[in-house]
Image (tube, rainbow, N blue to C red; front, side):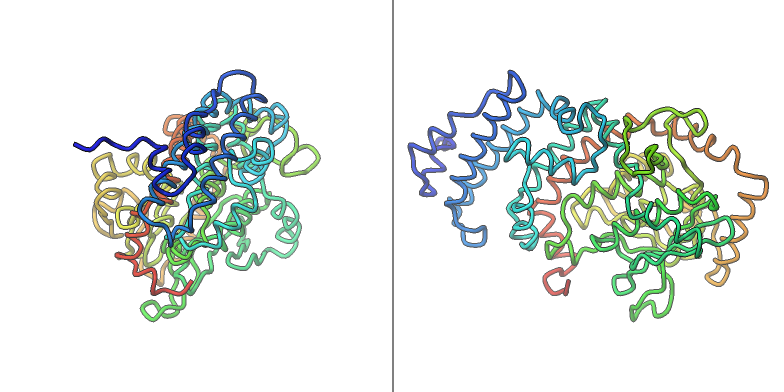
Length: 479
């Protein structure tokens, strides 16, 4: 029976210097001790590992031994990062945020971490190089981002503060709020916001991709959600898909087809997309917006989610939301139904989560869907592709009204009137107390801590590439 090669032997088989490889594998740093000393030791170890890795060919040209060596290097470096973060995640977060006196969104936090502890997460140059590669050729540097965010979310004080930072309004939303209030509409490119009476309508417009979500739509969608939550003349948000350009659905509205798998396969969707989406606009719909700082800035001083008795115990400003579903709500679009207060769908509309055929985690559906349909049906949907069709008896668990296509406008208007006719004084209070029993902040925080790491594994898995090629014919599609 042949013995399993030890890591330095695998590195030697790939042509890496035997003595240098052996010394490196024996030099894994001890994470204990002061933060600065541990960070310096980690950076030195990671720099040496990157130096060894740089001597291997690109992924497409590696032999089996060279790929095995690369895997050994990556596993050891990720293990060192994990050990360091188990000890120092909370302390590092405090250093990066000035003792939680500054609110940093994910990109800013990760950029600060890359500068403070070189090698802990990819820097701007690393990310630019990775973004230039299609998904099958990626080197997996983004896994370190998921690891760092996961560890920080797992620490209660740091995690709550980070969640609060992600619930603050985007600077663009604050800049364009005056435009919405004066003109009643803001054109954000792939997203349009229009005020109709006391309602703000968010219309997603990605017509060539059946209103799929991607790196192009994400920022405008979050900005639109912010505008609806910030505008004091709006009481209710409405989300609707725009008219699409597709031979099967000519000139009709589609609520959303989920993730843009073509851009994902061609490497144009960063891993951070998943985290920014679910910690950003989706969570803002569900939990509300942390108000701007006293100076009007989106990231003013403060400690994230703090109680304010004039709003709710979490200190957020929130509103009721309606989804107007036409044709289908696939993937991420289906996930949105879990955070809506009222769902109206045209008869025959399909709701499903194609997670099984994609190979990724469907956002926060694993946390939220069982509340609507029960654990067994949720597992059938997530693991086996179960669908619901508006109008069928079991679909009532996911939508509140079923209408004919020609009746959607009237149904939305009637629901807005019904929700606002007697005032909305208790709306935020009812939402907040429902949420307190269903999904307390720490439940969401702990879920997202696990999601950050596991989604990173999925995003960089060969299984995802294979699924996209088999089920989506991704190589033949144009980005």
